[in-house]
Structures are given as structure tokens and as C-alpha cells.
Amino acid sequence: MQLWLIPTVYVCASLIAGVLIPRIEQAYLASYTLGMSVASAQAYLSAAASGMLALTGIVFAMAFVVVQFSAIAYSPRLVLWFARDRVLFHSLGAFAATFVYALCTLAWVDRHGSGRVPLFSALMVGLLLVFSMLLFARLVQRLSDLQITSVLQLIGDKGRGVIHDMFARVDQGQGGQWKFGVEPADRITLGPVSQTLGYSESPRTIASLDVDALVRLAREREAVIVMASAVGDTLVDGSVLLRVHRAKGSIPEQALLRAIHLDTERTFEQDPKYPIRLLVDIAIKALSPAINDPTTAVQAIDQIEDLLRRLVRCDLDAGFARDSNGVVRLIVPMPTWDDYLALAFDEIRQFGATSVQVMRRLRAALIGLAESTTVAARAEAVQRCLKHLDLVIERSPLDSEDRATASQEDRQGLGLSRRRIEA
Image 1 (cartoon, rainbow, N blue to C red):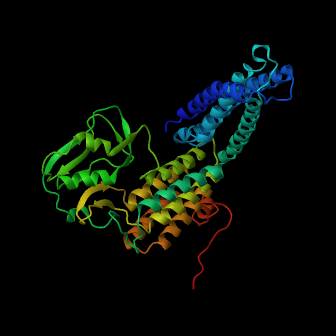
Image 2 (cartoon, rainbow, N blue to C red; image 1 turned 180 degrees about the vertical axis):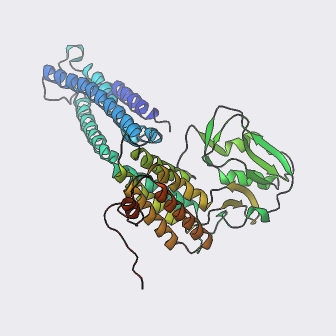
Image 3 (spheres, rainbow, N blue to C red; image 1 turned 45 degrees about the horizontal axis):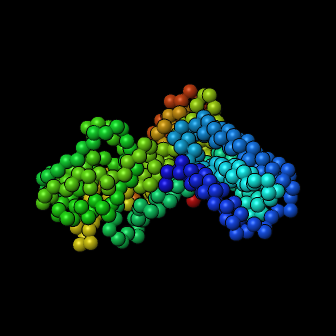
């Protein structure tokens, strides 16, 4: 549902109710009236209507502050995430609905000089006011989500969710049709390319893939679909979306395009790299000379390490989707363990090279990753990152004492050195 439709539905519903309910009251419930003078009822309804307009202005101001704050303090890529909060749109809809319904009810007070105040419509305005105040309180409470700890936790939770949904543990395997890293791509006989699907529209990002639809289309033609572009890639004019191998007949391009969901920006769905990207953005912005907040970078590394510890136990290298007969019908490019390590640590290491706190936390994270994996190749990749980190510390402008301090692991950055105790 488009978010702008939420306040539209509220306004349309209140307008319809404002037209029908007072008429029903007058036709069938005329004996029920509110024990309130006409002047008092008019003042009450006028205050409710005008107050809702003022409250709507406050909500818009709060939304503007939220968007600006998230863009400046965290990352521009978080702006739409906060701006698309449904609580904001429900609040705007409730305030507008209360305003519209109060005006409609006001038109029926002392209708034709009857001196009547419609009971149920006036009570409905009161209920809408209470509902609006509850939503406003909820909206104010949402401001607490702008605290750095809450923002990092929210992004980490999104990452943990997509990792859980997409990947199987190396030591457990995975049932079903979607399997990751089950077999190297060079063991699959693809055959000749029979169809290539390109892109020619304005730049868009692959948000997700309808795996079931692609597998079904490939099975109908006894083909294998190989995605040339991965989830999270931005498509530009001339980009190749996918290639179809050994198909018996052509697959309709529109059907293929419907199975590839595009958006104006990356999403968390089917993209475990995106939460890491956001966490790294927050960390390197905190390390910029304008902000100079290494503690925020350390908190971001906490979440990054947790995500990598989950990924290190997963099959990662490639994605394969099979049909009900076990035949591979779809191949999707997936990041390798080295890709995740580079995404998670390279930029933070570069921008935090002069921060003792960040170097110590990076070392603790890498040592923890090396100890948590049983796959030799992944442990070797982590050791290469550790050697690179040592090289950066050695060549940094820090003095010898600071370099020695930066070479110690510390999960708090600067808090508790953990020296190795020999057995």
C-alpha cells in the first residue's frame, strides 16, 4: 500500500461518516440529544477542528526534524526509512479525519434553528480526539528511536532477520528448493545462451527476486536462468539482467521482468549486505573530522561483528534454486566471505587509522571471528585482515606508545585490554 493512501483513506472515511451519520441521527435518532447549549457545542467543535490543524503542523515539523537529523547524524540512506514510518502517516490521517468530522458535525448543530446538538456525532468527535492524542503520544515516543543505540539495534535486527531467512548453517544444511552454496557453479552444465534480457529504463535497483516465478518459468522451458545482476545492484541503460541457457523456446520478457522487483533504492529483503553497508556508513561518518565520535563507530562495529559471526557459519558463495524434481533452474550471484569482510572492515580501517579506540575494537572483532569459524579458508581470510590491520597501525602517524596500545584487542575500544594468557 502506498503510504500517501493512509491519510487519504482516513479523510475519505471521515468525510463519508460526516455526511451520513448526522443525517441518520436526524432521521432515526432525533430524540437523542446532548445536554449542552448550542454555543458550548459550537465552541467545543470549533476548538477541536482548529486544534487539529495546529497539531498537524507540529507533526509535519517533527517529521522534517526526524528526516534532517537522520540524514546529518547517521546516513542519507536512512532518511526514507524514518520518513516512511507508518505511525507518522496514521497520525496525519487521524488528525485530518478529526478536523473534517468536527467541521461536518458543526454544520449540524442548531440545524435550521432547531436548537439540537447531535449526540452521537459529538461523542464521535471526542473519541477521535482521544485517538489522535494517543497517536501523537506514540509519535513522540518514536523519537527515542533516533538514539544511536536504538538506530544501530534496529539495523542489526534487520540484518539478523535477512540472514536467518536466506542462509542455512554450514553444519546443518537446508531443505526446500532455495539452497545457497550447495555446489560450485562450474559443476553445473549450463549449455548455450538462448536468450538475454537487458535493461533500458531509468536507473533502478534490484530490490528482490520472485524465486518461485523464475523457477517456474525456467522449468516450463526446461532451461536454466542465470542472473547477471545481483540483488542490490543498480541497473543502468544497457545492463544485462539475466541470461537463459538451453531453453526450448523463448521465455516472455514481461514475465521475467515481473519476477524481478525494482525500486529506487536498496532494501533489506534478500540483501544481507545492505544492513552492513548502513552500519559502515554510520561508523565512517562518526569518524569524520567534522563529527569525531569514535565511540559511535565502536558501537557500529559491535553490530557488524554480530552479523559477521552469523554469516561465517552460513553457506554463502552462490545461490541455487531447484524445481520440485531437484533440477537447478536458477543461479543467483551471492557475495563471498571475502566480500563481506571487505565491506565490513576496509572503510572503517581506512577512516579510523588514527583512532586507537577503533583499532582496538577492530582487532577484537577480527580475533573473535577467527575463533568462531571452523572453515579454514574463512579463518585465513580473517588472518589476512588482521595482518592488514597491523600494517595500518605500523604506518599510522601515532607514536610508538599509541601504536602499542592500538595493537591490543579491546571489545570496548578503550576500556579493558585482553592480553593473551599462555597455558
